[in-house]
Image (tube, rainbow, N blue to C red; front, side, top):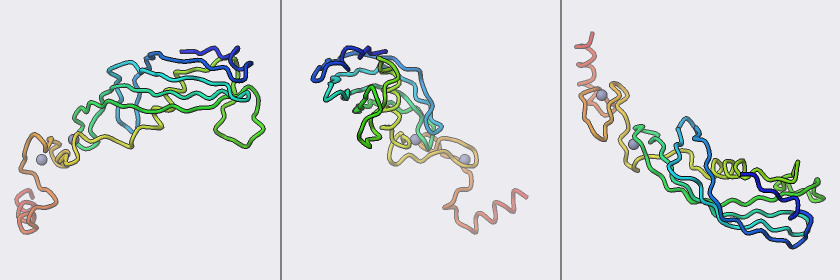
Length: 166
Ligand SMILES: [Zn+2]
Ligand SMILES: [Zn+2]
């Protein structure tokens, strides 16, 4: 969604309340696919304070992704905050957090995606004690057991197994 702020930026003290939904394309993050199950819901306001537009939104979305260990699907409800500042010209202050507007518009989808990706944790696990995949046969150790060698195999047994394999 494109927000036209050409009027707002002229009026110090002006406020525009926002309450909207937005749909973004699915994305890939740290090798995990993020598949959105709902649109993003956003609520908040953009305020002109001394010529700088402050955008503050609470956002939430639901998505599915994969467990980083076992690759099972994980459903996530993800509330997050969006807080950005925009100005028309290069601000006088050394504040790097103020984005200079190229036009009279704010591309909210771009803002949402940036904030969303910035708020995501490194990865998701289906559960804290996910057993992951067997490194040998690839079976999901949460659901199956296999007879492959694993790190905690008795070393004498491992030698025997290696012998039998040869
Ligand atoms: Zn898992
Ligand atoms: Zn296995």
